[in-house]
Length: 599
Image (cartoon, rainbow, N blue to C red; front, side, top):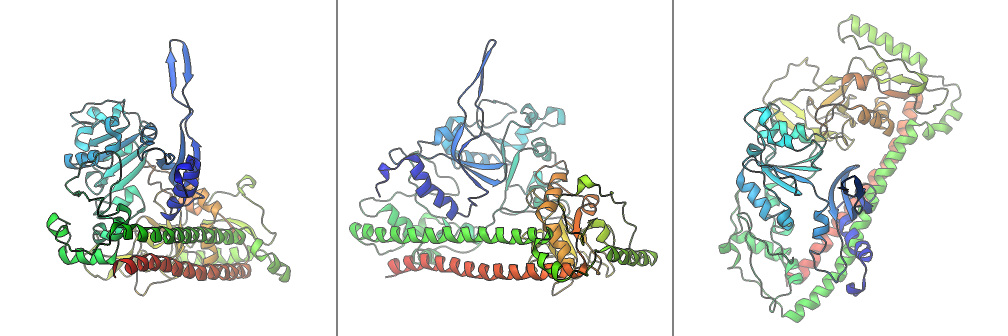
């Protein structure tokens, strides 16, 4: 294929889009193509005004709906790699916060080097609003008194993205003076970067920034096969930083594309590991790299091997793209199963076969009687008053044998928030869940940590089988997410970012959790979530207690969940097959490298 004959759209379709999908972006919800995203700059001349040309991008990548993270500008093969940079620069508005000058300098010369004269480093309390990228020290962006804060000279909507380096430092404290900056720009997308996230009594990186988007261990950070070494092929001269050294290669001796694949081979990784000492501060230095002895084919042989690589890598890309698509389809299938369950479609035939099963009104009486006995015995507390259900509140029709109710009608008592204490660096008797335990919508027993605090045996924080856990504070995508507690091999409590729902044991708790997880309920939580920090909205006990639940008779609840579980079992088997395909794809790539370079 002669790339020089392809248009920009062809380049996007044949090369850029597959690469984005391969990198695990969801093409249905995280990628938009050929997007016009502004009405154009307004120009005023005296009493006349006009708009400039609308801003339009080839691709925009989103973290989630309405939160753009990156713009991709394509050029055909007759342009240089950096030809679209200037156009992309016109779209940015970005604040980069750090607490050390070295971090600002490093970023200016590294990640933001392409922005050149479009960068204004905010220092000595001086402000210039004419550029696009604003690296700043916290110290230079705040004053000794709130009325002297420099950041207030920028409107709350001036930036569209705030990148916070080393986010576990000052701004992670609730009472930090630097937190004022983040709260001033609460409507901005905040991305926190840290190698050492903090979760203590006073400091919580997750509490502010929300669930982790991407993680890598220290060992992964220096993994050669993961990109600790690469080949730079840009047109713009760049400077090495204190964490990055550069080397030149002889193009008459080695093909760069061939060399990039060699850097990923087990041969090179093994040779390098033999030279580089272990430990947290591992560095690949000149004395480690240059003494390595490697076998090298003649240049024509390298290029012949490279041609085989490219053909096989095309097949690998197609395979990984198909895997990503299948994962997305499974997610949609699960959501559809829950939707059918809550909207009564899943058991339409069951109701025809069981015409004598009446509405759950008798069940409500039994639940109320049960709660009255527990309250009289002082085993539960009095619940908050629930709102009446008006006709305008009902989101959809249900069968005659179903009834609408509030979540609080089904609970023994009000929802309870959890507790977070300082984690221990050893195994203790108090085990608590991490927020990631329920992020996927399923309970993951492996997501735990130990606390140095001892909990009384009669504490309400201890979980019992059948409890429903809700994320009452997280990023907007996850807030209100729930999971059914299926039990642990040891007693556990839950953190303060979760809320516990203990429903009547007269109900099918799996069905209640399915109702909480349904799209309509999640939309209700998201639409009503509040909080000063828009990046970490909260839902309270009253909001959860007043959530509307379509309740079928107990027998039909069980029938619904039996059919949902059957559908989910099909998904689980497909998940296992997809995981096997992923391993096969990874082994295929590794096998090709090994076959070529291990000879």
